[in-house]
Image: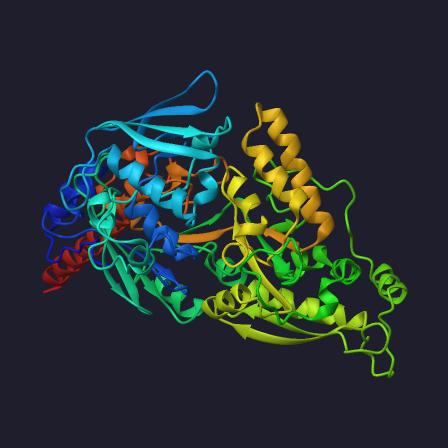
Length: 605
């Protein structure tokens, strides 16, 4: 970001020499912003927000805003992702395992100055539990959620559960605002302007399609952020965004495409970071069967190609995809071959018992034996009995270069086994509409997976059709296992159930995980520090988009940072100070040379 660097003109020789003997901290202080100057951290994105209503949020930018604007009841440790206090200070489970008593902080206020109490938590949880809104999977077997005191409430369940320690990814809402609305109004509530939370920042400006601004909460219970504003600017393409970083117009970019990420490696003043494989990309198949007895109420219609409801066809397609080639050529090594729906960083991940690996000959054999043959010799297989051709609509995300390139490779491999595709590139917003409406044959999208796998596993349950489910997959056996893992009596028992669930998804193939991928980030390290110390999860973590808001509280201009937060080296002297020293020395050389030259001319005269 421009504006934090300071330049001083007309320095006398005595002043320059005196400056050289100043300590590095004094030099940094001289370059600091003035007391009345706002400190603004600016990020770039190519992805826009659709909503800031937490009950309707869907995409990463929306959740990033809410992560900063609101608080969770329980959060994640930046060291090992264990459950740690947030709005809750302590919790205890009854001997029969059916009741949790949870105590809350008594020093928290909402952004509008109203006090935070147990009423707000109970209102939020009951709103979601009683109306089965987004997030209800975090509140399983709820019998009652009741206020006990101003800062204490109880959560009673019909089955013993450790759900409070997942922890629930539910943003706590202010009852004095949301409680004034009925359910229909809550669902339509724009929540802007005046987005009231208890978090370290508050959304104060939002220009759709252009930018949004969050202002620091100086009274945040966890300590005020070191910056005054966090601004996100939307760009039409990554190239323009990277140029803005190079020119100092923005300070941070996350989720970079590989080529542009590598173009920033080694650039002076810019630090790059390869984050962990916490996310995956999947190719999904339509699974909504409206007349099935197992279908969800939201599975009312589908336009999916009938061949894709045949497990043999889906299995053949997976055999036809060279996932290792995608990792090598598309990800260029920044990822790994996808298998299960829990990515490699997660302790709950298990590899399938038997991998479905690239084997086009096996793919052709499966299709031949299932009766999908080319009946008119045009190179495209037909439905058994000479029906429709296996020609699929294939939707790719225009906002992801990697998934688009991967899709083009996949289209070629499918053609090799007699399946054609019609590739259509669409925005994330359009793709959301298509998959919720079950109006697709194939599409590629992805997931970032939380430390606890409960939510990710819930997206494959029948009831998530029409919202979080990628495909409207319905499997009563899987649904039963999902509930069982929520009431497991030990980690070992729960792990065994989750292992079985991952295997079911892998075998049934409602979708196939193509690859796990690293998050690629870059920031202006000539201006900023405080990002490196907060990698979460460690040791190969994120600089900004973490599980928690660690960096958002510690990011600070390099000129204002102490030696302990300096990323340059062991000396405690920042990059800016080194540049200042070098510049000062150069200036002395020039001045001395001019003085000597003047004296020489006088001597000659």
